[in-house]
Amino acid sequence: MTERNLLMIPGPIEFEPSVLRALGEKTRGHLDPVFMKAFSRTIKRLREVFQAPGAQPFVVAGSGTLAMEMAVANLLQHGDRALVVNTGYFSDRIGAMCERHGASVTHVRAAPGSIPSLEEVEKALTGASFKVMTITHVDTSTAVLAPVRELTALGKKHGALVIVDGVCSVGGEALEMEAWGVDVAFTASQKALGAPPGLAVLLAGPKALAAWKARSKPVAAMYLDFAEWLPIHEAYEAEKPSYYATPAVNLITALDVSLGHLVEEGMAARVARHERIASEFHAAWKAMGLSHLPAENCRAHTLSALLYPSGVDATLVGKIAKQGVTVAGGLHPELKTKYFRVGHMGAVTMNDVSAVTAAIKRALG
Ligand code: PMP
Image (tube, rainbow, N blue to C red; front, top):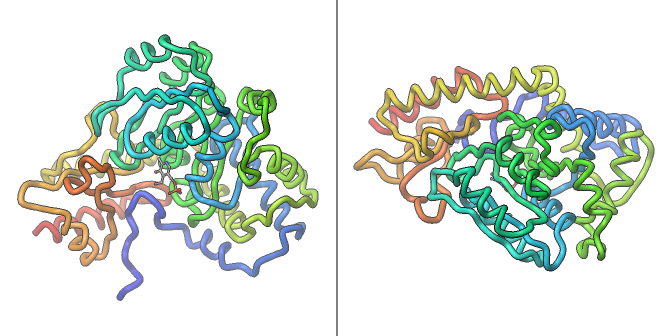
């Protein structure tokens, strides 16, 4: 089996060779000055990537789901209310998590492939006092892009803390955490941040930290508690030795290299590149007669979700793999046999557009 398949799923993705070389370096001790410097730089670079100079980054071994649970566990307590702007599978997941952590949860749902209107969200916000509102920036199950800026403004207006699941957006879609008033945003290493899976990344703004400090009871799970992680992140940022739980040395070293590429490209230029590549893909889908699952007003730039044309079924994904490109099947429980997904984020290039569309054409043929 050739190792030259192009990995075009919505994470993990193709990584820059420099990132993979960093991953393969000799593992240093977690208190080695070279590693402390890399961790410190990672923390500072995350503030640039999330555009949140006043936020506290956390980088913890685990996946995006851990970052999601850290957000929920630190902000919510038994009896709090949470409003979930629900655009699919991952919105369901954060809603279920809020319930596990004792909150009473209201969902504002839209049909798969669409977003609830701002009016519906505002109506729900007016109906009760919500401690937290959650937004899935890009729901990876349906490629639906939510209007985070406008939704956050509504949440703020009604006094809710806003949590943004940016797992399929940060590093690819526009997100100005501080300017837009987002209180917590999280992602994972393996998507548009461009490093292998294994790191949960979360940024908490000042209001989120204040809400966590004002809790009446500590967070029950020690591994999730900001109280355990804050001192070590402050120490690492200052390049001072500190220990709570062994950091994922090689992954953080690789993430540091990848974030260096993001910062060098610049966030505005990076978002513009994702938009250019997405529109190139969209033009190719149109030329091939493929239709999108998400409605035109809410299509992500980090992936495409495409309906199988008539007479074609989910075996297409295997056929595309035989043509040298790995794409993903459907994920939304109601529709998963009806569509497939192509990730186009991170180090993606215009050459990938040609390779992917040619492979899909051959597979369809
Ligand atoms: N939220 C979104 C929007 C995601 O796309 C994913 C992963 N596909 C997750 C959360 C969960 O992340 P992980 O698989 O890294 O736990």
